[in-house]
Image (cartoon, rainbow, N blue to C red):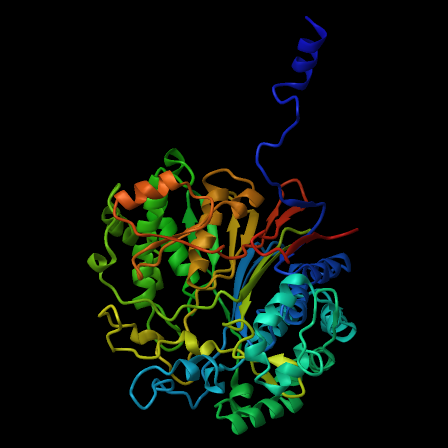
Length: 566
């Protein structure tokens, strides 16, 4: 045998030692944190290094995102958390979604002409729901954290007090948001230099008022936000500018623990968020519809596989738009919607190579679209516990109003309610009454924090994403890529995405889907719309031999997966 042949035989058929997939996740010998902003991920990883667990790290990261990702990270918003507690081998879900104030009513956003006033619904203080983020983070860390509250909050306090270098994405975002934020004196003082000049990339942004609020929460817990100076300032602001929230609303707010909604897909177990998130129910319904379909043989992102996905998405969104709401106030048929039998009854409506028009499926028109300015983080710790946490202000920077003297931006989540239930919309369809504005009700959401377990019940990976109504379909595709198509975690996140939600009757596609594929889809009756990048599916995975993997979605370049250091 010649020397060359011997060399090739020794090194095998891959002499260049090229990897099988284009990208690989970040490895860690212990835990890892993945979020949409690198300093926040580093804050969470530092908590893991101090002996904190996945909950400690997730809470630290979320507080840090309120400092370094102000367009979505928050104290004045809300969200959801799904937790796999590996020592207990049990899953938990935490609902810290915002609530309508007790004086809210279903006609809150109707103008004198009986139409929805979009300014009231999105930019006034009527658009602010009672914030849930602080209550939720405190609840999670108090119940399951291993470190003290002050230890977990220290990185966020330090970032707010000492400041951080404004990164290019934030500099650009603040410049675009100037017309909104500079209308509010408190917000303008936080995010712009004296005179209103925006911060340039590399300049230091310090937020001493936010640092003081964070320190008050670290020292006092819940009273540091829902009582005392912060509550007083918020109530005064509402009184002065026509909002509804008062200290009674703040005192009454609770973030309840609930049972995750659970699905099974080819022996794997999927844990996600129940209502008032629509994410878990809709995700499991789509998985049930697709489970017996041979998507592997169709090929990832082939015309046939995309067609099949889209038809399943439309069926699930038909139910999402009409059947789901806040289960504390309305009946929600979770068991029926997530049952295999129900999926079996719907599956014949998925016709090969022939799109069923949305009008033929009926159902209500879509609920108000959730904003793309949500943010998601995922954490794995050395024990194998997993956290998926999604939080939001709704629009970027919420309604653009900050509570004076606190450094806290307010949400405009009340816009996620159905503003005109029972009234035909532009499509001639009636929107769901179950998501109408009502006192103490939580608006329906698309947030879909999700944990997947292997067939033997051991933890596998956690994921979630921002993206408004596209959140659920993005999570679906990450799951299918990892569970069915055999892609690694990073490639599962990177692959091009598609989205359909029944109305409008069109398929949104990211860059990377072949024109030949879209031509076939159009021949089968689909309307194609090119889309901007969808989501930021920051994900982590537990390795069976110990250690973990992480990936920050490259669609948002400010993100990072940061491994726990020894």
